[in-house]
Structure formats: structure tokens, C-alpha cells
Length: 508
Image (cartoon, rainbow, N blue to C red; front, side, top):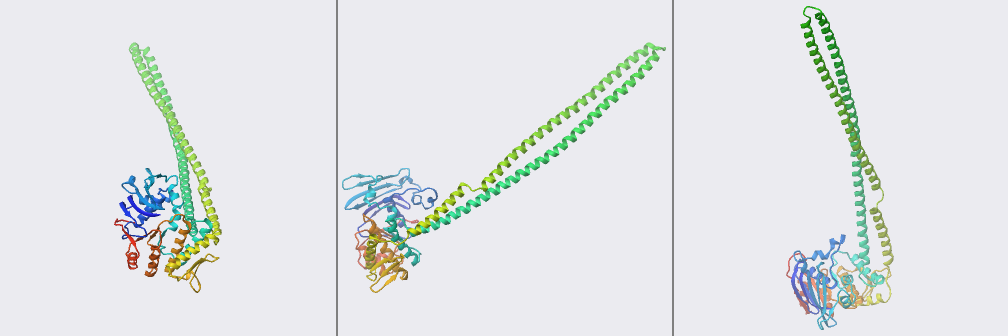
């Protein structure tokens, strides 16, 4: 594949950016945060697509990291390239609601289908992971020489076990270790959440028990108050009855006295007048007695009504207390059942345990599968890597191989040297040689090399040797850099290159 032109409508910080490539070495330069890494990601997205991730993967989601903030529907671009001298143009809209991918052969106008695998066929069935693990080479960062040697051992072991370099055994082991930490954190968080839930339920249980005890206490107080009230009303009723009876006795005595006096007058001098007077007094006292008796009766009725109302009020309050207590007792029983269920092993805990068991099994299988490699693939890779290493080290190291323990061993003209004994710069050269060799061995269709700040640990002589080697290759090389160091060495050694400048500000 030879890249010809890229147009970026919107991708991260890059907007309406048009970039023209040339065969050979292309130096993409710009200061820190100029968009170099964004551009490298754009090329990968154009070739292999870009989908939004879900769940936990969102935190490392390239789709959302480069999605335009204010023009999501213009999240798109195009790429022109040649494969076997045939020109193609690829256009993509990455916006997930309007996702499209168009591929056309510009020589004859034939429309090809990305969806049905035409692009994958043109790329020799190369996948994203294989592309990023071979043709894309970045700075190894702060890894030690031993760790870097481990990365190389992993590549060779990978060829034996998977037939390609898109699964990193060393990285897989680290991922498993990291996953183990995550599972332990999940388990701890789950147990803490469980303890917190049980504690809240226990507090609720205690509150409900306290409410029930208060209701019992209130019921007892109400019963005492009711008994006292009823007793008082009964005494009042009794006293009213007594007064009623006492009143009648008094008035009866008065009437008897009046009758006796009347008798004297009946036979006396003033009999007629006395009789009339007696009748009037009799009627008066009779009316008064009836009136007084009626008032006493009304009082007695009122007391009985109070007794009845008190009984009704007491029964209603007693019923209310009983209903409240039944409700709280039911809720307490439910809380106790919830506590018992919470204390048992739930599906989440069972799932965590399954994950732990699966992790242990994966680590066991990974350990068993990371043995040495043999066969034609190994010899082909050794020969390719040795040739590249000899070129970029000026013939100082002529052979690269792995021993039975999967340790990297280099040979100069006199002896064999374990890679761990070499300088950091030489190990970087070995790393580069193996990556380039793997790309050549595994890829049916040669791609372009992408170096993102990959030469930070190279001295001038080593960098000059690598650039000279890249300049002799038929594949394009894209060198992303924030300094003029590579350009200075290219000019100094008369190595042809094409300069591309990114001016966009912001974070790359």
C-alpha cells in the first residue's frame, strides 16, 4: 500500500486538513499537541473503522476521544492510496447514527463494498490488532531492558501459538494480572456494599422494634387512662342517681307536710281559701319536682353518652395501635428476611468467584502456552530479523535468535550475547528489527510503517543507520516527530524525504 492523500473533515482536533504523501520517508512534524497522534489514529480508523464502545471500555474509547463536539455528523474523512498500482479512494463517516464507508477503484470507477470485505481483501486480511502490533511502532517509554527483551520473547512465542502477532502473550499476562486486581477490587466493593446494606437493614430493624415497643407502651398508657376515665364517669353517674333519689325523698316529705296542713284548714275556719292555697302549692311543688327530676335524668343520660363515646374512642385508638403494630411487625419480618437473604451468597458474588476461577485457569493456560517456538516460521523470522539488525547496526550483530528458554541471543563475529547485556539503544534496535521482520513475515500485502516518536533513545549514529535502512525500503515510512532531529540527519546523509507540517493546536 502506498498512501497518496488524506483529507480530514473532522477528527479530534483536526479540521478540514488535507495532507499529501510521497513515496519513501514522510516526516510529519509539529510541536507537542499539534495533532500527530490524532492523525496516526485517523489513518488506523480509516483502514479498520471506528466504533463507539460500551460499558467499562468507554474510558478508553477512541471514538468518543476524537468525536467532534459541535459537528458530530461531519465526523468523517477520505483516504487515497494505491495497491499494486491500482488507485483507490476510501471515504468514511464515523458518526454512529449516519455511519457510511465507500470504496472505489478510481481507475475503472468500480464501487467496492467495505461491508462485505473488499477492503479487508485488499489489505491481505490484515486486522487492526496485527497492524498496530507490527507496522505501527511507538516509543517503548520507560520499560527496562529486561522488560523490552520480554516483549521480544513474547512476539516469537506468539507466532508459534497463534500464527500472528495480534495477540500479545506478555501483554495478555499483564492484562490478566490487571484484571485480577480489578476483580479483587470488585469483590471488595461488593462485600463492602453488602455489609453496608446489611447494616442499614439492621438499623431499620432496630427502629421498627423501637416503634413497636413505643406502641405497646402507648397502648398500656391508653388502657390505664381509659379505665380511669370510665371509673370517673361511673362515679359521676352514681352520684347523679343518688342526687335524683335524694331530691324525690325531700319533695315527697314536703308534699306530705303540705297535705297535713291542708287537712287542718279543710276543717277549719278558712277551709276554702286554705284548700285553694294547698292546691296551688301542691301544683308548684309537683312541677318543681318534675323539673328537678328531668334535669337529673338529662345529666345521667349525658354521663352515659360520655361513657359510650369514651368506649368508642378507646376502641378506635386501640384498633389504630393494633394496625400500626401489625404493619410494623410485618415490615420488621420483611427486613429480617432481607437480612437473611443479604447474608447469603448472591449471584453477584457467585459471578465474581467464577471470574476468579476463570482468571486462574487463563493464567494457567497462558503459562502452559508460552513455551518456545519451532518450525519454518521461526527460521523465516530469525533470518529476516537478523538481516535487518545487521543492516541497522552496520554489521556488528549478524544473527538474532531465541534459545530454548526463549531468551534473545545476538551473535557478533566472535560470540553470542544475551540481549539483556546490551545497551538500551541496541535493545531498541533489536526491538525495531523484530517488529519490522514480523510485519514482513505476517503480511501478505505490504503496508506503510508508522513511527510515533519511536527514536527517542537512539543516538545519532543509530538513528542515521535506521533512517538509511528505511530510505532503501519500498514501503512508505511515516515518522511522527516534534523535533527537527530526524530531518537534520536525513539532510546530513542526503536521504530523500517528504515534509508534512501539522499546525493545529490543542492536545494530540
